[in-house]
Length: 374
Image (cartoon, rainbow, N blue to C red; front, side):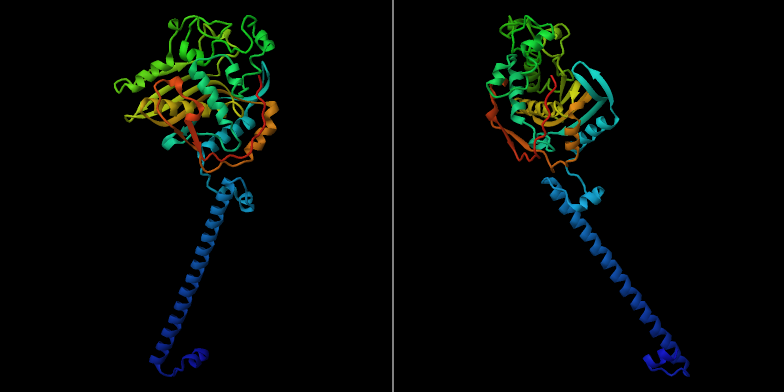
C-alpha cells in the first residue's frame, strides 16, 4: 500500500482517496492486460502470416520442380494444386503398396483390379502428366493413325514413332500364331475396328477387302453428335473388342470401349473402359490420347469438351519398372495441365494432321525411362 501511496500520492487516512487509489490500480492492470493481449495477438498473427508465406513459397518451388526444406519437414501444410494428377500418383502408389505379384505372359507384375480417374477438359485443358515428360506428339500421331483406320506400322515409323515395333516383328507375330500376317501389320485392331468393324481383313495389305462390309463406328458417332436431336443418345459407343477377329490381331486391344455423352446442351464427355493398364507406361498415353480424341470430336461437331473419365480393369506395374515408379512418386505435379487449341474445323475427321493441334504451357519434369514390355 505504501508503494501505491507513493506512486499515486494519496492520503490513506481519507476513505475517498483509498477508493481512488484502488480505481487507479485496477485501471493500470486493466491497461496492462489489454496491452499484453494485443501483443500476443499481434505475435500470433505475424507467425500465421509467416507460415502462410512460407507455404506459398513452397508451392511455387514444388511446382517448378524443387522442394524446400519446409516442405520436407511439413509436407501436409502444402496444398497441391493439380489434384487430378495427384490422384493418378495415389493410384500408382496403391498398386505398388497393395498390389499382388502375378505371373503373366510377358513377365511378373504387381497388380490390383478396378480403379477410376477423372480429368476435366474444360477451357481447353489437356491432361498430359507433368511428373515425367510424356511424348504427347507421339501419342497424337498414333491417335490420328487410329482415326484413319490404318494398321500398317510403317506409317508410324515414317513419323519416327516406334511404339508398335516390338509387337509387329516376324518373331512376335509368329508367337501369336499369325504366320500369314505381314510383318509390320497389327492386324484388324484398334482403328480398324473403329472404322471397319468386323470387315474381312487383308493380311497382306492391312486394309479391308471391302469397306462396305464393315461398320464405321466413329463416323456414326460423329453423325449423331452433329445432330441436336440425337447427340444426347446413351448409345454413343465405340468398341475395339471384336471377339470374331481378336485372334487375328497382333495384340488384343487394351483400351476396348469408349462411350461419349453430351449433357447441358453442348458439353461432350468421354468414358473409357480399359481391360489392361500398364499404369506407369501405357496409361499416361491412353489418358492423353482419349482426351485428344474428345477435344477433336468436340471441335469437329461444334461442341465443348467437358470431361474424360477413365475406368480401369487390371491395373499393373511390371517388376522391372519399380525403381522408375518410385522415382516418379518422389515428384510433385506442376500446378496445372497444359491447354489445347485445334486450329480449324475440317470437313472430314481423317483430314486432321499433327500441326492442327497446338499444345501450350506444358511444363513437365524430366523423362523417366521405362521400356514398354511387349
